[in-house]
Image 1 (cartoon, chains in turn cyan, yellow, orange, purple):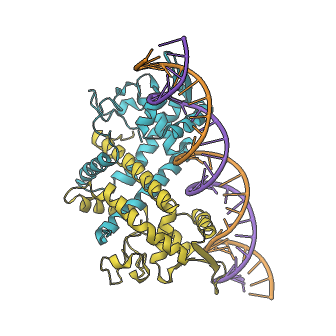
Image 2 (cartoon, helix red, strand yellow):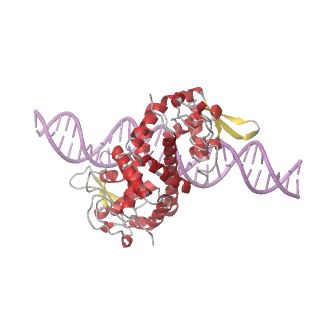
Image 3 (cartoon, protein in one colour):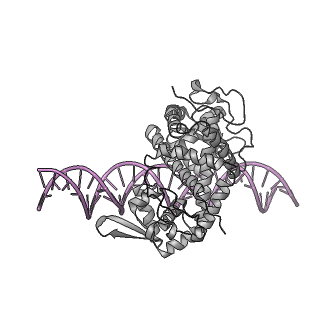
Length: 188
Length: 188
DNA sequence: ACCCAAAACTTGAACTCTCAACCAACCCGC
DNA sequence: GCGGGTTGGTTGAGAGTTCAAGTTTTGGGT
């Protein structure tokens, strides 16, 4: 028989569901208002801004933001219309499309990043007490390990140096080529 | 100046984002495949199944599943087309619409609940180690408190006794009328 | 009685995402 | 040097969500 959720498990599940829904909605609204794009699109621009040369193939981009090829294709098409990303075929393997952040696109990320990070901090990190962030981190690392077979292991993901990144003046000194956390603050 | 996320904070933020995306996608796929509806719609049916008389007004429903009025209206319209929910005007205040779960709708929840709960358990709870669920719960309680002004305080939300609930034979013995956790297993 | 704001939904259009089908370029083995 | 699978992306249709703008009903004031 099914093992139902006990009372504590239900409270966690619902708190998680609602928190996540409300948080992601708040983020979408904030970014839509301040930058004219949804969070998923912001993540694409942000990923490109952190990539070496500010460009990635569609497949790399899909891996980076954990989205389907189809989603990326639609999204990048829209971002291209807005003039924030340019696409071109890769010489050498002409199946491959390279998406490159334009100057206008970079300006959008740079302008949007502070408000975005502040929103994340205010809604997610600030309410957490001493040590809770630590706990959350290890918990989600475990959950992600289950959900994403290739998470945790593959080196060189989000690894490009922070040189190309947004808000570089405020970087957190990640100079080594570790297999995670390339970053600055414009990521999510 | 903006206070950017440090390395640990970024790792948490990304693990949380990706876990949540992958988890919700997995849930949507499982429910779509097994029951022919997305998770948001399942939550509506589930909420109704737990409500006294298996009916709620649109506003109550919106509060219960944390969705906008517009979303609920579209969703319930679709569920009504499918024959799983019936709508009618409330005598006494004819602005108000009452949504009631039909027998067919109840059958859908009953059939879908076990697979759904098992998926949640497998993807979310199983990977968590000793005590991590506790930690997560208190962390999200804090976050939800920030995001939802009226969370935590108002009694009588999701409070209907479990009598009307799904999978009643497998209930977790919640006989009292506490202000949370009405339940069985068909909630999320 | 009457007017006006608020409450409770509903509707339509725009947008994003998913799913399935598709196309083009590459690679491999014979 | 050519079929046949694989890889990398795109496309179109369908479904769900959001946002802004309705509609109807109610509750007050005066």
